[in-house]
Each structure stands twice: as structure tokens, then as C-alpha cells.
Amino acid sequence: MSTIAKSPHWRFLLDLILPARCRACHRTLRAETNPCFCPDCWDTVSRIDGPCCPRCGKPFASAAALSHSPGHLCGDCRERSPKFDRAVSAGWYEGVLAEAIHLFKYRGKTLLTRPLGDLLLPAIKRLPEADVLVPVPLHPSRLREREFNQALLLCDYLGAESGLPVIPDALERIRVTPPQIGLSHEDRRRNVRRAFVPKRPERLEGRRPVLIDDVFTTGATVNECARPLKRAGAESVFVLTVARTPAGGG
Ligand SMILES: [Zn+2]
Ligand SMILES: [Zn+2]
Image 1 (cartoon, rainbow, N blue to C red):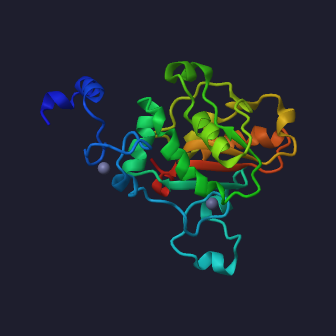
Image 2 (image 1 turned 90 degrees about the horizontal axis):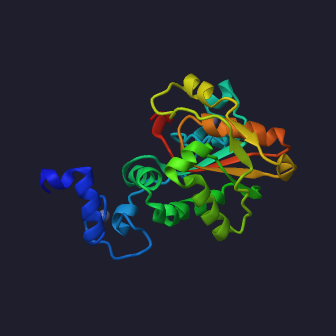
């Protein structure tokens, strides 16, 4: 492709006039279920379904630790216990999945809700006690910029497919926080501290909500969301994300 066609403006125009092509292998797309990737490339999404920390979901290299004690926690969770009870991620944040999340979140490719939501369906079965879905909220000013909350789109899809109810406004984000990218674990925690409050907390009393978000990096954001849910009387708080960054970095 020529240099000119690689510029973002030209790419945008070409997207409008040319048939949709797979973002990874550039093959013309025929299946309508995934607007950005062909089935072969989408199959390369690396799922997380092996042995992992029963608390934060960090994958273990082998099942050895869990075979002796099923409650064996990873080093991070032993050092600092998360406020949530269990976190599960569908796949690794790399390759086509990382690109899909980027397109979904920052390029307005909301038709990716379905393929991304389909990745969550087998993952939510690992949280059988969950009884309601709650999105990680955006601050109103960021919502105005982006025009949609990607976590809420995933919640609505998952709710419709799984039959679980959704409380779209269970939490409010009361502070605008700078992006977490590039911050250390400690700075991430500080960045989101006291950023969320429950709205009409009586709706959470005795419930077992699952927080839905796109990416789990260090867990700082969902941890900070779990606090007000617990304070509102939630019995347990679970976390379900589409992807997890390798080694908790990124
Ligand atoms: Zn492809
Ligand atoms: Zn852990």
C-alpha cells in the first residue's frame, strides 16, 4: 500500500468506499458477525482457561500449586488482598484481541460488541454465583467525548445472552482520572482512589454483582469499584474482563 493510503485520513476514506477487509490479514470479509476480523484470524485469540489464581485470575504456569491446595493465591494477592472476590478474563491482551479492543473503544467500532461479548460467555460460567451485571462507569465528561461506555455495551449484550439483569448506573465515576497507561502499580491505585460511588445503594444489598470491563491490567480500577459495591451491601463482588495484559503490565 502506498504511503498516502497509510495516513489515517486516507484509511478512513478507504474504509468507507472499499469492501470491509480483515484488519489482520486484509482478506475481504464475508461473515457479518465480526466486522473487523476474518474467522481464521479471530481464532488466533489466545483464551485464558487454564489454572489461575482463584482470586485475581492471574494464570499459573501449571496446576501443581492448585492440586495441593485449591485456594492457593498468587504472590500479589497474598501480599495485598483484593477487594473483589474473584476475577476472570476471557483472553490475553495481545494480537487481534488487543487490536479489536482498541478499535472498539477508541475508533467507535461498536459492532465488535458481539464478538467480544461472545468471548465473555464461556468466561462468565466460571462465576456461577454472580446474579447481576454492573459496568465500570466512565466519567460523564469522558462519556460525552466517546459517546458510549464500552463496558455498558458488553454488559447489555451479556445480559441479553445470559439472562442476568444489568444495573447500568450502579456506580458513578465522580472524578476524572488520567489514563492508567504507563503508571506504576502504586500510582494506578492512587490515580483511581475514591473515584467511584454507588448510586441508590439499596439495589446492591445482598447481591453478587459482576463488574464488567474491557481490560484487566493491575486490577486497580476494578478493585476501587469493588469497595463501594461492598459498602453498599453486596455479598460478593466478581470481575469479568474481555482481556488481561500479560504479566499485569501494559
Ligand atoms: Zn484475517
Ligand atoms: Zn492473585
